[in-house]
Image (cartoon, rainbow, N blue to C red):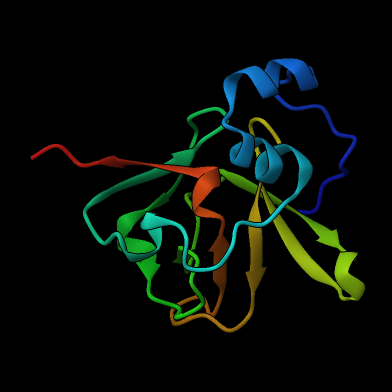
Length: 138
């Protein structure tokens, strides 16, 4: 479902409030649509059981059983948790891509591409800094 960037979200903060609660790199990605360098997130090679949540608001976004090694240098998933993310069309960088953001706070997470594995054929290529990993308790 495409949404407008002007849409209001359940969790809404001023720029100063976001800056005070996020690390500088998280703010750059989540609030300013930045991208972390490929291969810099420890979450890229994390394959432990658990849930990946939004670093901005804690909303569960992806489960570990949908994560795969895309070889891109960013954490990748073939499907989000139902209702957790929304998309918009991103026409920056002289191309058309589908941007993925948290449905609760609007934070920019990454992009989704149509070159993923079965069963969806989609690759949700996420910025690791936009996520936090919560391991499953034994």
